[in-house]
Amino acid sequence: MNENRIKPFPHDFLWGGSIAACQSEGAWDEDDKTLTISEVFQSIDGRKEKRRRQAMITKEMLEKARIDKNILNYPKRIGIDFYHTYKDDIKLIAETGMNLFRFSISWARVFPTSNCLVSNEKALAYYDDVIEQCLNHHMEPLVTISHFDLPVYIIDEFGGWDNRKVIDLYLSFCEVLFERYKGKVKYWIPFNEINMSVKAAQKTLGILYEESDNYKQRIFQALHHQFVASAQAVKLAHRIDQDNQVGAMIGSFVVYPLTPKPVDVFATMNEELLRNYYCLDVLCSGSYPYYMLSYFENNHITLNINEEDMTCIKENSCDFVGTSYYSSSVFAENNDHLELTSANVSLVIQNPYLESSEWGWQVDPLGMRYLLNKLFDRYHKPLFILENGLGYKDQLDRDEKIHDEYRIEYLKKHITEVRNAISDGIDVRCYALWTPIDIISSGTSEMNKRYGLIYVDQNNAGEGSKKRYKKDSFYWYQELIKTNGGCL
Ligand code: BG6
Image (cartoon, rainbow, N blue to C red; front, side):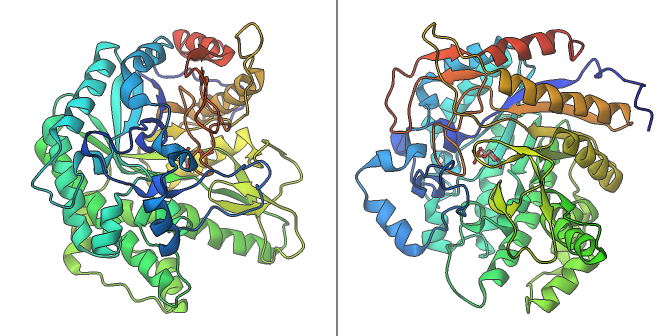
């Protein structure tokens, strides 16, 4: 690799920003919408509790949340009220010059019950307008069909994604979206960070936590159903509009061995296969890789997979690979007595060479280039970076400004590595930061963990003027886009 030969970003590069319905919309029970799993998570102070794993939702916790009258306990029920403020918010976001806006559509809003013959016209009218606003402001909409907000009725009536019937319900939802937004939305992601289910099965698969021998079995069966659903969604999207582009997305898990000891290197390789590559390997090749077959055998997991499933997956591979990237971590064969820190949905070993955010997430810009090289080498598909950003407790100054030079620094270093990856010869088509506007944190349900270019005056308890303020990073990103990355 030649370090000096810098290639510019392609002229049609997609510069964007991403948000998710369950972290922004609020209006959790408006216009007939029903409860989603994201609205069951209570807020925790992720800086203090950074050593604690995410809450594992049990049946009891779900029951309690269902009858709890204090919605302030569940910040995702309030979001940033995007359901009502979307017009102004989208206009403001578009002022950055972004040409792509990624958001998700709430399944429980479009189908408030499991009766998939009756879609909710009020909800669809809202999404019609969100898409219209994006197009009016010259932003390509990229829709995540399911982003960590499984309708609770899927758990109540079907027990979660390990029930095969859920595939059909999900496809009915997809069909409504593909038909309705034909010619308007071209880019789709069936499942946000599909691989996160290995560690966060409640959020993504609706499998409530229980001490049971078949818990793992249920997770991998449910994931198999999501693979089939993804492939069917690709097929459906292409049938309805051949211009549709459907991506498979992972939450990247960049992991280095703690030492050059062969046992650490080998353990790291296995961890990386399971956490980072397994889902994409199945989705891109249409078969289960050898290491998963052996993992299933060693863990007494027997999946119910039929031949048509695998044919469908093989014949309907994704058009592009999407990934999020926030931080990297370290792995060792044995992590007893080692300092641990938080990463996205798990605890990891601290890397002595990296600094961490206040939430413990380790900052590693070069990890971005490393990841992009590995993904492209493995899948040879166009890459879309769909999330990258820094969670920080920003403060509004007395002059009503937010001087977030730390965020600019983070973004600048990471985007420079994207450019370096392009110079390495990698086909990166899109960089969408997380997030154009402050929203509720997914992992901790805090408002304090802000990623936005736009500050929302609202605290953890949902109080504040809700006024929006452009941070310094807003103007920086605007200049970056104007110069197509030339000002890096
Ligand atoms: C990604 C999710 O895994 O991480 C987002 O797709 C989430 O929904 C983001 O917000 C950052 O995580 P957190 O917990 O800091 O909000």
